[in-house]
Amino acid sequence: MNKDWDIVITNRSRLLNIDLGEVWRYRDLLAMYVKRDIVTFYKQTVLGPLWFVLQPLMTTVMFMFVFGGIAGISTDGIPQAVFYLGGLVCWNYFQDCLSKCSDTFNANQQIFGKVYFPRLVVPLSIVISNLIKMGIQLVLFLVVYFYYFATGVDFHANAALLLLPLLVAMLGGLGLGFGMIISSMTTKYRDLRFLITFGIQLWMYATPVIYPLSVMKHSYPQYVWLLVANPLTAILETFKYAFTGVGEFSWLYLGYSLCFTAVVLLLGIVIFNRVQRNFMDVI
Image (cartoon, rainbow, N blue to C red):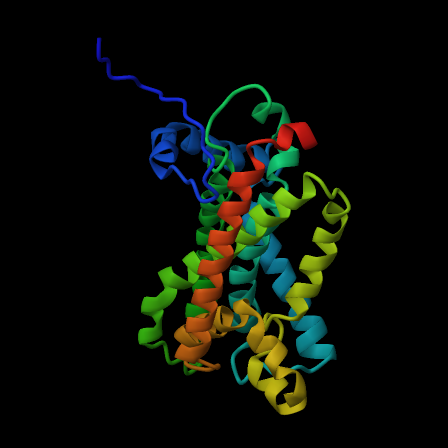
């Protein structure tokens, strides 16, 4: 007799075998993971979600004192609070996605070893939950932005603001892609876990968070190609340009970052999908 089965077990031997329909069927689990990430991260803390605001705010003040005051690094005429906070909003989202996704297999090995569900749900939940955190920090950025606008600072927001959803998606895609690649590699090479924090810190200084790209072009033109090769450079420069009208905006640079994001995300999913089949035997 012919029957309609709910689950069909087959041999998945293809390298690129991504069942997004299965991920959609587990959307309730995805929502549960998102809620868990938000609720438990600051559980049993006194200030709770206020840390979403205090962390970038205190970091901005420190940047204003160290890099804007002592080092005297130019911000292209943009108020330092707006410049640094804008860069931190984008960087923090990417950093959180990368650092947490890169520990997916090690942090969830007990759950993965007991019950089956699409493993892609876990890193996706990290990207979505951090998106909520970024939204809160973006509101803080807008408050500071409109404060300076009300005091007479001449901002020139432009049509590049329409690219904001694309910029956020690219940040999440880069964090997700690199995170899945690193997570897949750390199942076998544990030493990489100790390099993640150090590597992310170095990456921030190679990204125009505390300085504009124009400063590097003027002071160190021989190293500009390294910054341009960084896919985050075009994203952060476009973000600041969209709100202030100041910065380096190039469709060529942005197109490069978009292609880079697509390749890294696809590569990350392929490697993650391959490693998840037998990572319990390795880890």
